[in-house]
Length: 126
Image (cartoon, rainbow, N blue to C red; front, side, top):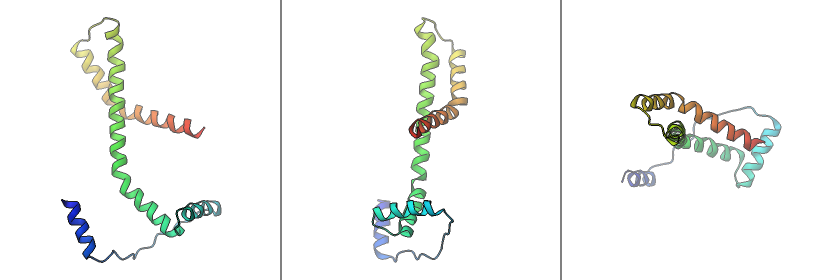
């Protein structure tokens, strides 16, 4: 219902005035690349850059959520890898061993998730 109220308010209010300017320095080749990208979408460089920057701002929360979900998936994988090996050998895990696995996973899951993402990024670049 909140979205409906926001849309209704937007219909009856004036658009926000653009009163601030953001300036950056870039190389000629970077500008040419940005210009091509903007023209491909039928926009000026300024309009394209504004939309790209504001889009980045709006997408920050979903990215954080995605990163958190990925980190938790890595944690599940780590628990499974650490617990299944002894179980498959026919061993029983004590409560202390299970608690140790959970502690280790909690301490290392974020680092492991970052390592996996970095490795995948490097593979894409090659």
